[in-house]
Length: 267
Image (cartoon, rainbow, N blue to C red; front, side, top):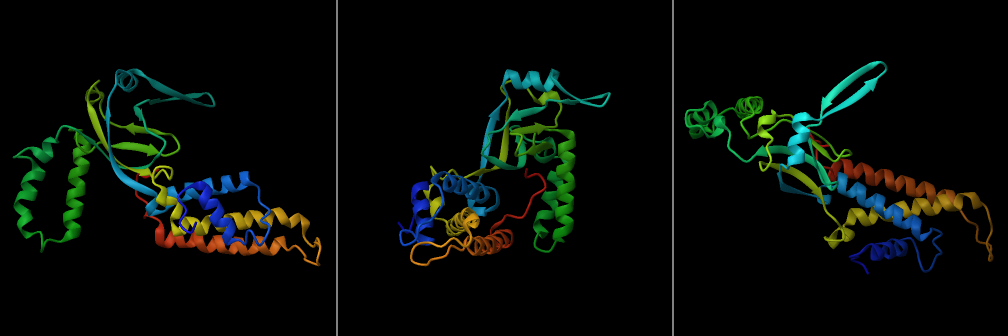
């Protein structure tokens, strides 16, 4: 099928691109499955079509409150003990990056009629077309930073690393109460089993084909020069080197064309 909608169809598509059934592709099915999984992981983490922006809501539990208020994590280096707060909430492993963390209740700075930011925007909005956009952005960023420091429940300072599956929230414990909410502005990977169009992505098809081609050449290298019936000679190294060149071109393309520019707090 020219438009694969499953892992099995993508596998057959790639093998046909490499010459099957005219040629015998000397790659094991388990090797192909591993390579497709690797390609999908790279697609999810580096291709802009591999993720979707979502807002997730989390309600603090009693365990969250206990962990934030009384639990510490101790790290021993040599003879010195270092302690850090366990101020985190578990995050699903399909989350690749987090942009912002919001509290449900509004910020006093932002919602107060007599607040600094409210008055600034109220008086300057009419000249938005002529205002220096750099000054506007810097002022806005400063006020949002002030908002974080005051912890009025809107922009909350946080730390996140994708490989930990934890969102560390650096706020005072008075805001972490059982039943309270936070909203997480984040990026979630597209699961190809649910969104089958992922298997038909042109980049993914090219990348999977080249990965299988490299594995094919790698499997044949040890038989370099072996002659088959009919005078055919195997040239696994040439297949391998061609695939390596193709992969370098594809990976350079994803970095320049398909990859989302890195953000400060994407893990």
